[in-house]
Length: 390
Image (cartoon, rainbow, N blue to C red):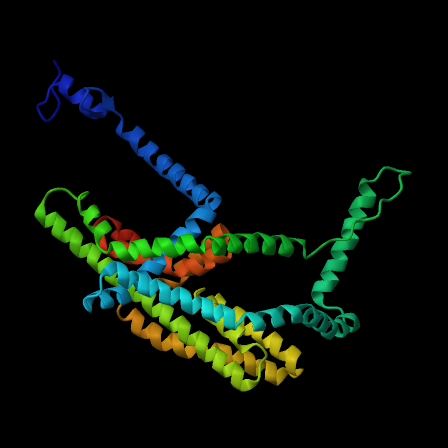
């Protein structure tokens, strides 16, 4: 029997070279496993993305309920420390939030109705304002569009058979994609709003359960006491970081909403409450939220007052409020919270915007921040945490 360099017989060396012997005595190819593993991971990622996309009407309210429970947990813990039963404390916090939101919506219903009534007139006024400049001096975009129409006509003439009559070219509907996208996102937001009672009940049950799920998770780490202690410490750090991040984000957005409302009220802008709510909600979207509010507010200020300086002042106020409040609270928050890479956050913003539309834009930043915290605390996921960090 042949013997290798290490002194082993050829019969014993051949299985080791061919692969790994499993429990049944059959060899598994190491190279085959290494080739199959990335393929399985890729298929699992594709399946997960497809499930998140097609079941977005389920996952969006679910994530909103979970994030709401994390945001409100510090207040429930504070009431429980005052010897209030946790179920009652959760009901009080959820009831106060639902009542406050309902009161704000009822108070702003007249302003919202007035703004909706003014939208057609505002659109016509904006089109009338821009039409003289457009008809007097054609812009580069209009010249390119005219050239594209001429080239399309040339291609149609070349493709047409001799003697055939030219068919009239259909008028292009350039706003068709915007209308379809608006309808789709409106339908998704309406479905989420319709599931508000489910979101409220989910947040209540999560708040009332307390550490129930944390104790259940400890059963999966094994029977070792040291491993359970480490897992309990990691879960506690993750909970504290996520709660602090979501709570501070909620408070900062509320301050931005109130400050924008007061500033617009002092400047005499119509429907200041609606603008305040829009500024607070859209501030959940990193980078783009404040810019969108500033552009829309500037256009509204120009249509209302008719002067460019006043329009720039209205837009500048929204950016100033968002920058000051965001800068102060974000600086304090980043000193206590994991920092996320700006490029990674922007890429995630594009991904979740494609995946869930407007709802994905609002949920993107909290999901990325929570993922960063979890990756930093779990040893096997720390390379992913380094990728997400600065």
